[in-house]
Image (tube, rainbow, N blue to C red; front, top):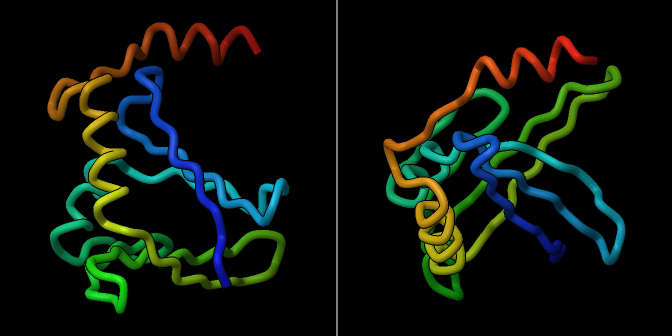
Length: 118
């Protein structure tokens, strides 16, 4: 079943990639992935537990298989999604233009201030 996914990246959360999965206009699920793990998953199998990434040669060419497992609301679910490696690499290249690999920095003082303000 084809799904649309929107990957987004922000320097405000430099270690994470946000993935929103859509069915038409409705967001079915949102996940955050570790950016480094996603980048490694393009080349080799990584992850265990709730999130896994595995390179795969599909009928349309190189792809990455994203395994997701959910345990929320007393229900368990599992999905395997396929994404084009070329598109994913282009997204990662754009994310590294925002914050370079190894240049990630998390301002813990600002994060603590935001948390305490709530």
